[in-house]
Amino acid sequence: MWSFENRQQGSIMCGLSSQQTNPLNKRAIKKADHLSKRDQAYGHAIDLLKYEGEMLWLILSACIVVNVLLVGFLAQCVIAKDADFEKVRVTCGIGGVIGFLLSIAWYGTFLRNSAYYKFRMWQAKELEDKSFELLNNKGFDFAEGKEVTINGEKFQLKGLSRYMKNKRAGAILIIVFAVIYILTTAYCCWYEFIDHLFKIAINSLIK
Image (cartoon, rainbow, N blue to C red; front, side, top):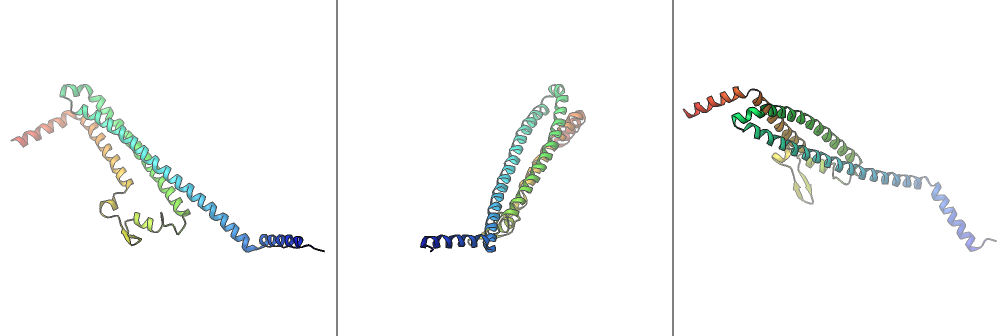
C-alpha cells in the first residue's frame, strides 16, 4: 500500500518529467540561454569597441607628438640665417621627406584603425537589444544629425559639430602636416629661387 510520502515523491517526479518533456519549457530554456549568450556577445562587442577607440586616439596622440617635434626642428632650420641655413639645408630637406613619408604611414594606420572602429560599432549594433536604443534607432539618428527626443528633451547635432566628425578632423590634421612637409622640402630644394621671389615681393610692397 502506497504511503503519503511515496505518493508525494511520485507526483514530484511526474511533474519534473512533464516539465522536461514539455516542448514549451524546452523552447523557453533554449530562448533564455540564447539571450544570455547574446548579452555576453554584446558585452564583448562593447569592450572591443572601447578598445578600438582607445587605440585610435592613442596612436593619433603619439603621432601628433612626433610630428610636432619634427615640425619644430624643421622650423628652426628654415628661419635660420642664410649662412646657417646653408649648413642644415640638406638635413632640413631630408627631414621634410621623412616627415611626408611618416604622414603617409600615419594616414594609413588612421584609416585602418577607423575601419576597425566602425566594424566593431556595427557588430555591437547588430547584437544590441532593440529596447536599448543606445547605438541603434535614437543613438544612430543623433549621430547622423537628426533630432532625437528623450524624456521630453530634444537633442541634435547642429552646425560644425554635425559635419566635423572625428575621422574627418583627424584626416584634416594629417593632411596639414603633410602639406607642411611638402612646402619645407620644396623650400630646401629651391631656396635661392623662392628667396629671390620673396625679396621681389617685399620690395614691390615697400615701393
